Length: 353
Image (cartoon, rainbow, N blue to C red; front, side, top):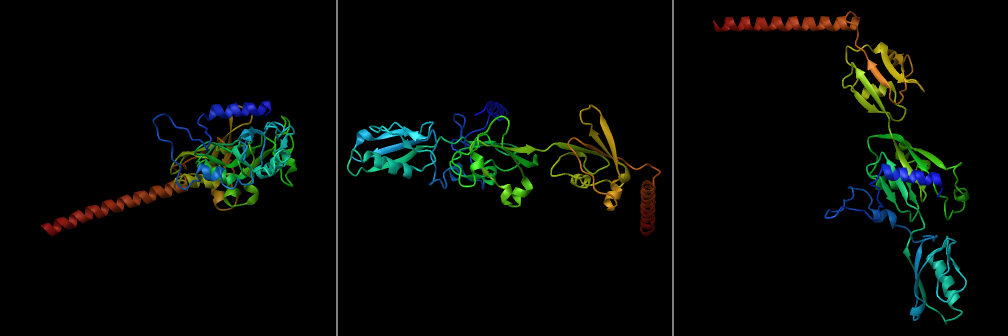
């Protein structure tokens, strides 16, 4: 693996020290292991289902047994060249890379057939170590490393990691750190060497993944880093129902942002909403005035927000038409309430006396 990928792996390890292999969940001494979330796939269901056609690679180990010939039994490892070269009494290596154990078994039977009559050979995969795990981190409930023993799609990794958190921004970044070991027809480009100057990189929208679009649910490759990006905040203050910070997702507009905080108050001056935005490469801010009243009437297009925007909804002046009408309505309501209250008391006194 290239130096840049090693640095990335170290950074991920430092940022998320709780990353564990889903096959081997770790727990503290005298502490029960964590239970899988309700409805989530268990690690065994993800890692071991559908791997009958597993293609061997360097680092995988095979348990080879020859019936009636215990001196020929051995546990051998596929070497860096993709061959099995340590079987007893065999001088020529057996090709194993990108082949199944059944294919290797046939070659071993043929090789030992030169010395034995009708040898009975069994070949079983004892360890699968040729594929680097994929790492899922960011705005997920459980940052996870998943052993890649079969083809796994993005949505499966999301389920294993517990799903998205509220901070998910709406995009997923997939960084490919390893070439595809055994490409199928049409996947030759994925087997191209990866260097520091050209790293395969994909961006997937969460909305498209949820919508079930095939192109938004790619196959995750061994060694991939899958980052669910976290949303940046925007802040809404002033004459709104619930002033607060919210997360910026999927091209958030001013209308949607105000709706998320309960909307504007009656005394708000919607024609002069102010957005304070950081200037690129500077320490000061610029103020953008937005006529939200015109946006509500479809007279102007909606305003798109950017990370760390501060939206201030001011109150209308005391002599503005809206404030005057509210004041008059309140005064009239109060006077009528007082009148009815006093009138009710007088009538009650007349009835008593």
